[in-house]
Length: 476
Image (tube, rainbow, N blue to C red; front, side, top):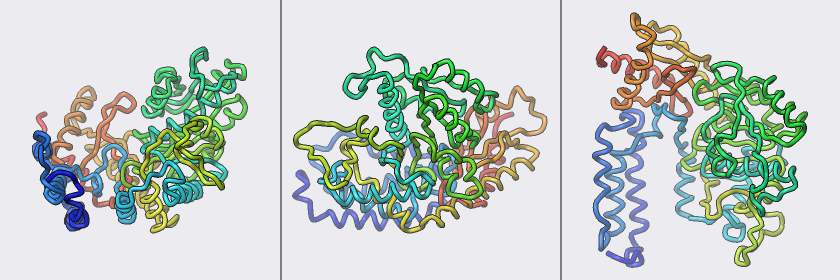
């Protein structure tokens, strides 16, 4: 087998093979371990030299399915609590298959009016879902990190214009360091975005009043006063990955208005607090931000890769990313958007389709119910931990993150970090349930992120059962 044109009749059969494999794989997610201990060895079966003559479409697809369904980490299942990873709702998964089937280039309206329209629609729906003003601009991105790049690039453009410089054409040379202030809840993806933008990841200054990372508002305001009205950027954090804690966005928006600052909000998963009346207060003030970031492959439960960025002034997106001046790239007319002029990507897949499918399928009520179920499950796990003699809850359960550690009776404090580190490693080796470790308030902790649409109370009950079984096997 060589040139794919000789094998083109196999295209539909290949998709049929994937379809036939999908049912058993999805059906097994509730019962199978999250991770197979032999996954690395199984994945090695993908290796070997590049074939001189290919195996053909069906053989290659069957090989990948055979290895993949055994060696994959089942992040789509109900017991993957590591990182902050959602699954893919049935509608979103089907929408993603449609994305690959249609293979639309979504950067230019002329290349795919369908993809362009779908992206405009889902951005409007997402703004409605989160209570963001309809006048805001937006763009879909591959991740929260690239959404940060989008929002902070607009902030950088605004800031440089305050110094009389068009940074898109002239760059940063000759400008002072852009002041970026935040709390101790800041996520590394914000620093990475600043690094990518040439602003420097370590120029960001944090103002925390205690070891939880909560913001010190008086110290932040004092730093803004020192700038004497020069422009600055504030980063508000909605949903800390360790504790679920958040910054007071309304108060930060007040400071931004008083002191000529841009407010950027990191709502990678926490923006979904706005979906439920129970948590909407945590998101109060997000509608006053200048730029807002969130992730789709977290609580929205659409497949990787999916993020979104919203910007108060859409014209800044064009100034930051547009003005290509390439004759073969025609500009959209009639009010349509060329999305490659309002975000960092040029060649981009039509990632709006799975978002459209899931929002159309389940609507506002469906997502509210899902978010509230996760809030209930997180509170349930928090109560179980708090009532257990061998576990310790380390932060109040505010959203869908539960932060705790194993604390068996008789173990001295100076051994708890080492014990919990080994327990976390053993849990991942066991594979039945996945949860990660982190450092919070100087302690080694277990952290459980509940954002998968399949997750229910018995799944987190199993987590504690497995932790106790694994802990019993550890050497003292």
